[in-house]
Length: 244
Image (tube, rainbow, N blue to C red; front, side, top):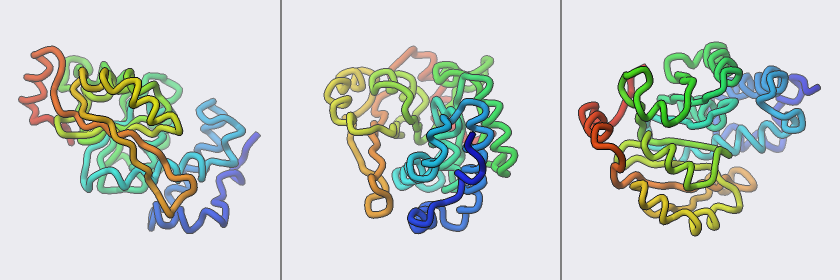
């Protein structure tokens, strides 16, 4: 069984970690320890992933911060153990992050992690699906953000259908993808356009900092597509939500 030893930052990754996390590196290390201990016990992280928690998960996610504007609101869809949403909140204290996750055992871990790491002022956890958040949970205001992130959640067509309704007009879906990014774009670009998204673009994050860099697909929400009542509700709210 993995232990806290697996969360120790490998010396060869120290420079990259300092570059990406700055003076919040200790906070990132505390989160790494949570992932390789509690996260493994609860089945959120596979035991074989523990020794690679820094390069495969934390640094990979933190590199995406370069694609997010200062002071932005962020919704992380299918957050799981908090990747990339928690990592972005740790690396970028200027962000306001909502973690959207439907499974109870995962949201319980996220809530405990947010409280334990002292992130309650900048991170909130919502148990539910992206569609529920976009519709307005419990009859309340719909969730929306400047940037919506997702990592290893679904193919690009389904991802766009879940995430674009949560994105303010002119905002962006930032999806962490692998080597199949270009193929997914070719296959699903028409669906993305029908959903109100612009032409998907591929970016590499963390070039000259991590190897390999993180590949992301970005889609700007150019048009609001959907029931008229949703569009009117979003307009009344000014298209974004910063409150907690």
